[in-house]
Amino acid sequence: MKRLTRSNEKVLAGVLSGITNYVNPELDPVFLRIAFAVLAFFNPGFVFLYLGLALVMPKEKVNVAQ
Image 1: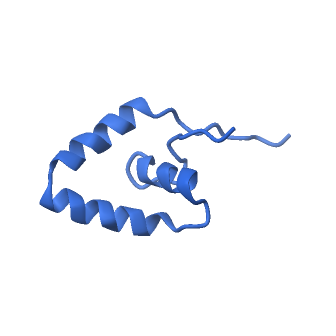
Image 2: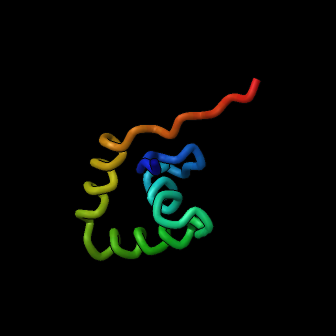
């Protein structure tokens, strides 16, 4: 089962990269980051949404091969 988690490939907290991996793993997270930056510029409430998601979303577990 697929879970929404913060990604380890992060710029700030990994929220947008995690959302991109959940929706479409083949999509580059840069597109979502640019769209989010534009939306946050016009509506600063998105910054609070991002911070809330960073607190609520669990971190992605790292698979360590032995």
